[in-house]
Image 1: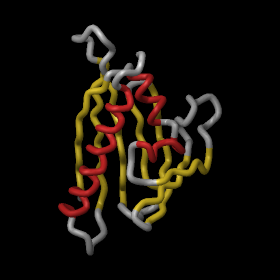
Image 2: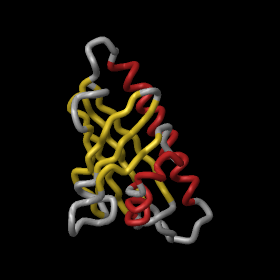
Image 3: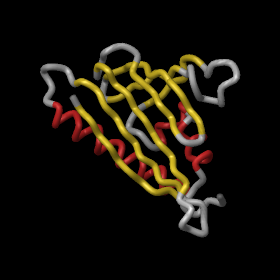
Image 4: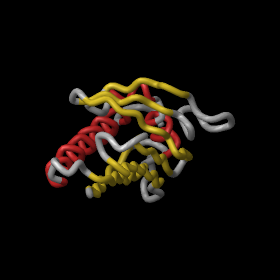
Length: 148
């Protein structure tokens, strides 16, 4: 079982962060993967939100993720099926920081899941955490200098 939590501050509002993370086919700007939109959101949901299915391709592995929910405070998604990680769940929480003059959002990105029996949890956890840290750093850079 892996459980990873990464935090990052961004110079943006929670809705700006949510919107950029729901631009599924553009996520390769931040993550080391390619994303393809398979199904759009359910009727009445925000663009890219609940019901969206995206195909993720990374390091020779392809799988699908389902957006479970999305609002100004949270995006939740899961891998469809058990590969490459069983019982996978990703939760990205956004919290507006009211202690600054400019808009700031604190992101808490949590991932959990069961690793395959043949792959040590520490190894997989290390690489996933490294990728998330890199992605959130790129995301933070993308908001620097932009008008919020």
